[in-house]
Length: 545
Image (tube, rainbow, N blue to C red):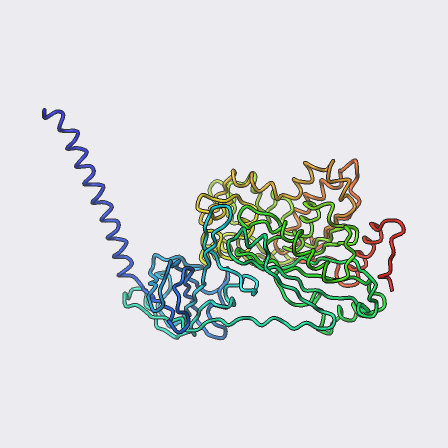
């Protein structure tokens, strides 16, 4: 072999040696950073849980213990640090270092030396072998409403007072030795009833038992009028087992519901938490599964078979606020022949050119607006006088600490789980980079399937004749989460419709926050009027007693 031919091989070998040396140096530096910086060792005891855990381990840190540190965490709360574990055994240690993610402090090295209360917590995930071929790990709701801080089966330890020094490599040790007990279900009463059952549709899709439920408030005189069937209001909201309208508290709603002037309705709140959130958003979704189908084919029929409901579209009303407001509008739009009217208060974004205040179709970044020499942060919550409560980046960064891959159980993550396509790893594709806020326009395009204003604009000739008089939307023009701007865009379209003209109503209230809209007597009278308008000629109205 000639010298000239051997030189390239020697050069390649030398280059490979350099690359390997650099990689080894990087790994060594990382390991050295993990061993020399601050360390917190967290474990859960065998007495609390005998099985291994795949999920998130947290450490919450606060200056006081008036409330537990875990309960003080939020986008603007005390520091929270997290670490994903895969098959962590009882009594085995999960070590937190300066490399682990935190919020509002990004690293343990950013925590000043001092005395703090520290608390360990373990959020237990479940394996879901889904029918779409993807296997994912998520927190399985235990009928607590997808709230990891109070979910039965999750593990925690009591807060411990510790002295912390970010320069010390001596590990602190925290033990999660307690388990959150099951939540007792409320008892039924003469007027409040509950149902809960395993959904065949959703359980097949998720590969694990998934449950649906409903809490039903009966009208006065239900038992003494055994032959009467009633119109129903399906009230959309976040997960709750409390009676619809807060009935039973002895307040204004109780007095109204039991009065002679209250329309005789059956009021129903629906429970459909998902592995991503306390509420599934009620629609079929690539990541969340066929919740729309399950609600229409399983949950509502279960209610209407057990209680004396008029099982006709004109007698089925929808109402709700915020998340529930979006569902109330979406179900009327997506299932136009199934319902007779929708009354949506302060709905989540109904036009994604204002996803709160982010235009997902044209903005480059969700967190910042570039101004050349500077950039301006976007807020996500305000008071009615315009003062800012929370910034967009902080809500998203907090969610990222609680759970990566859209697994926080938080608001921005459920929107991704509902509206986004499935990523190669089986989890939702990010609308924007959770760290930087840079928007992925290919994902934004996929969100149009759930953009209510866009759906109505493209399909008005078909949908208009079915729902032109069924849509009613109410919002304060200083909505706390900027939801009024999307409603403005929706209203711009609806007021210009032809063949047919829009015959519902969109109402804005000056300087009203989240979640303004008609309630109690005003709302129920509107619902009753909508039922009367939709009832066929000659329909018996025996519920009017």
